[in-house]
Length: 282
Ligand code: CAA
Picture (cartoon, rainbow, N blue to C red):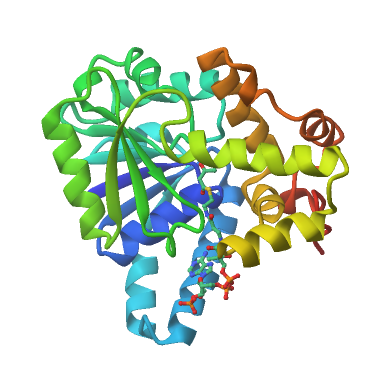
């Protein structure tokens, strides 16, 4: 594994590109929009500065990391020599299926195709390719350079060889990979999203305010962020989409999204990225 293509240069895509480049992989960062790529490279540079300021990275390592990243606006050019492609596009099934068809067409026949999806079925994604054994979930957590977990999701047809390669590769990034099977929400979001939804219900039913709910969970359970702040950080639209996947996938009312979450997303209050969610952001 030498050359890694990352599809999508948003928060997750730029964090994944940053992390591979920092560990000396050649990274092709692909997005349809050059302005988004420029912004992603600026974000990566700023996040590398945090590491330099903390003394965990030298200026030389920062500049090598940046040199390891090349940006592309064409999937075909970005993936044609890649050993692994990690897709980190928007959480939209139709979009992901289209991207995987393109990847299957343009990536080398032996390349592994991974998705950073937080809840879309790996088995469904794999089914649009002719290499189901080489399709896998590689679910990084935000902020990617900081969080140690990679949830490695085996689709129905994923081979042992592909899984073992991705487990070792994740370790080479100093991450801790955990292997899970492909069912709605996998493990991370099957457990996290019901907690976030319950926090929103607690607010909706007037049991306590935003500050109170987050403080109970932050100080009482030693969580780094309260669930409402974490929901803002993840994106309320993303939380809603994942809850819908859980609700549809299991057909169990316990996963029904809180009406307050539905309303906030409909009103465009999607959390930190829109400057307003449960908190205001400047
Ligand atoms: N790149 C590099 N370093 C970064 C960074 C980035 N993007 N963001 C933060 N950091 C570093 C800082 O340098 C700092 O390092 P040290 O602690 O070693 O000094 C550290 O991270 C903490 O940063 P801050 O001091 O700025 O802020 P903080 O103490 O409030 O921590 C946080 C920020 C790491 C985000 C912390 O609040 C946290 O862990 N929050 C919960 C994150 C979480 O749960 N993520 C998972 C979300 S779910 C998901 O991603 C998957 C999904 O499918 C929905």
